[in-house]
Length: 109
Image 1 (cartoon, rainbow, N blue to C red):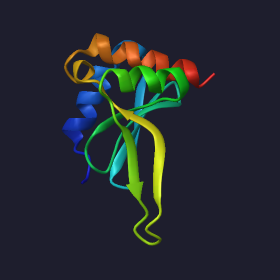
Image 2 (cartoon, rainbow, N blue to C red):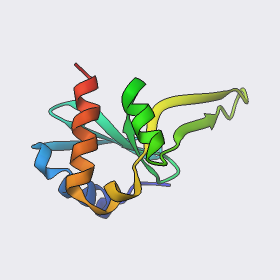
Image 3 (cartoon, rainbow, N blue to C red):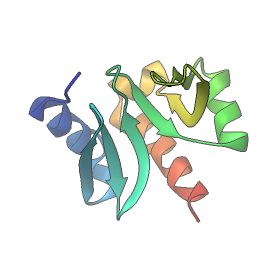
């Protein structure tokens, strides 16, 4: 699934309180950056994910988020990635989305 220009515009607007948001297409998805630091992606499945580990991953899971898992098409090996789906409220509310994004960006330090 290719990410549309409309989806990119939605994300850059949704996270505009973080400052300059940039994106980069990758393997059917999209990476989302604030000040050059990746904090979210749109997966090839079209779902939105925050980058998270440790306590943040646990907090997202408590909100009903699920971790990105995939199977390598060539080897069949299953893998998990450090990306968790947006909580439902973050899809609808830019303030909520930016709160989670700031937590993700804080882990990049």
